[in-house]
Length: 122
Image (cartoon, rainbow, N blue to C red; front, side, top):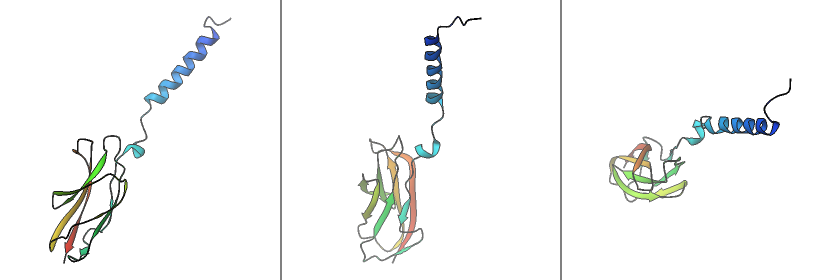
């Protein structure tokens, strides 16, 4: 019994169905997740108050992020647009300090992705 559906329509329908499967498939979560690890200094590291200390980071801002901000003890001290690099910290007062890098959007609002380390400045 011959098919009542023209072959060109069947091919178009099959292509449309395949495209829908691709478009509706969940995205690869690992590729879309933003991250921002601080690679140096290590958490708990001692820093010399007289040295020019560097914060080394790498970032993937993800689809909602744009760049990163650097914070020392909750105060913003830098805006970084490179995805991988370092930032020279201003002279730090002796004591315990918290260094953070936060992913922000184009409006400079944190999107909730950050990494922080505690250091001891001596």
